[in-house]
View 1 (cartoon, helix red, strand yellow):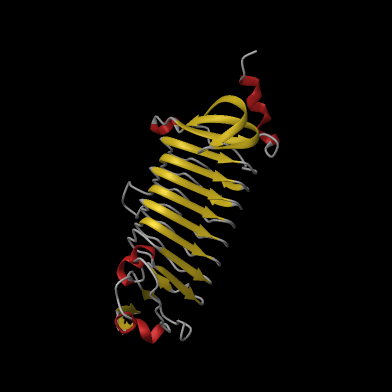
View 2 (cartoon, rainbow, N blue to C red):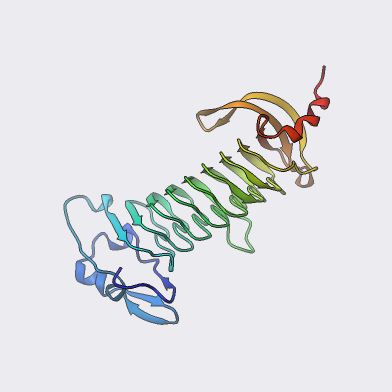
Amino acid sequence: MRRDLKLPIDAPEITPDHLATKSEAEIQNLKIWEGNAKTELGQVFHVSVRRDGDTNQTSIRIVGNVAKARRIGYKMTTGLVVIEGNAGMHLGEEMSGGSILVTGNVDPWLGVKMKGGQLEVKGNAGDLVGAGYRGTTRGMSGGSILIHGNTGDEIGCWMRNGTIRVKGNAGFMPGIHMNGGSILVEGNCEGRAGAQMRAGKMIITGHTPSILPSFTFEDIQQKARFGEEKIPGSFYVFSGDLNEDGKGKFSVSIANNPQLKWYERYLEA
């Protein structure tokens, strides 16, 4: 970064696909929006280029706080983007391949409509991770998202496939409108998980205040499966959301949710 950003910049051009064959001068002269005016990428970033291999293995390293930079990694299909700092909204929007790693925090709409590839955030992420755009019914349809910290509300909104793993806590309504894929929250959830869920799988290994009444209690299981991984611990297993004729599976830790013990009365003797 040459300077701190006072206005947001729109930078969908910052992808390995777009920059792989460009010279240092061409990258510096790329036009991007800063607020409501156009500027050059070189006016915002110091740029240096090193050529030492296949353009399919292009890596982009961004150093500094780019929380005001939106749509980095837009529709990327290959390569690697490493952001050493915080990142802005719509990171990895509609990406279908490659990898993005953020060492800091990320603003909302991470991996919106993601189709493939890998996103990893060492810090926290905002609302609507792996979601669809407002007014659409298609969210994340492939790829994987790993968040080492906490997330905001409505992660996996309209999710259809792929995986979201949160090592910290999640906000309200993870998996809302979910229609496929898998979500694992290793920490706590603020509540209303799986609202209007139709398919897919969600696991919460921490605490959640309650289960929506439109979910049916099915069983107790001694482990939960997340992809090929077996998550240890005993889990209450629910299905729903019945309001949507849903057949999604929702597993909740027994040890961390003693308030749900009353469901056990419905087990067959």
